[in-house]
Image (cartoon, rainbow, N blue to C red; front, side, top):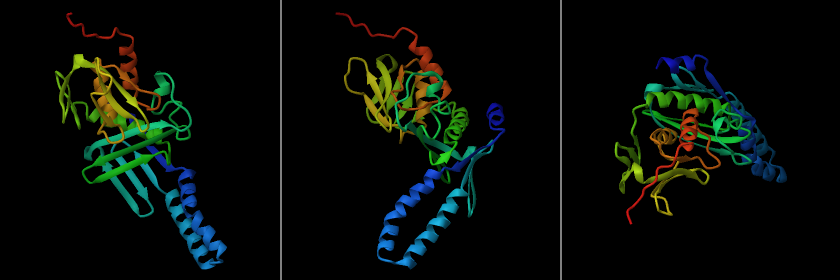
Amino acid sequence: MADEVTALAKPVVLRPTLVSRLGLGLLLAPIVAVAAASSAWLVLGAVGLGFASTSFGISRRRIVVDEKGIRVRTLFGERAMPWSDVTHYTYWSGPVRATIRGVGIERQIDGPHGGVSQCHHTIAIHGHNGRVKISSAFRGADRGVARILAVLHARFSGMTSFPPFTIEDDGLRHARVGLLPWSQIEVVRLREYPPRLQVMKHDKAFPWQTASLKHLPNGILLLERLSERGVPVDLGTKQLVTPTLIETSTRHAGLPRAEIHRRR
């Protein structure tokens, strides 16, 4: 764990973007329009005061990622989630305007396409006493997500359960349909938006099983574990991932594909 503490020696501080306050303004715009049209100046003043105070509260919000865990600061105080309290996360991302091309650093969460102006990030970190959600409403969301996953993947290094999937010695198990041996897995791929994980079986046109990355516990870690076992992982055209998954998926992509030969 010493490496993760060193990596987080400098805290990552996430601040709300202007977009979050603009979104609040758009929600209140119809009320303002009606109040102005009917000369309801008292209502208009109350809405304006409410917008100003709420906007100020949003602007003062902070999420800090450091060696101890994740802290959420608001006008009303601070809430801490230590790393030891985290049970799992869910994370998905996708480009704002265009698809993501290639592998390598372009795919990296905090790479050139990871900024909030170019990519949407949504991560929910679940603990024993609640959860913390980080989205692209925060500047630096890509850096925050990358740091969080680096620490949690180190902490969850021995994890084999990713409900409804479980990694076993003989293959990948699904809670409802049972075990799929490693030799029968053709590819695991991500499709749609938010991305859906599809496990493809040899000689089958339709997925063996699917799961939404939006709801899959520790989904990026599951993809890392599958790729490390030599399972081909197709990242599709949207999801950003960790350097570990980039490295393993790129390495295995250059190896000959395993095939099943049946006797005639």
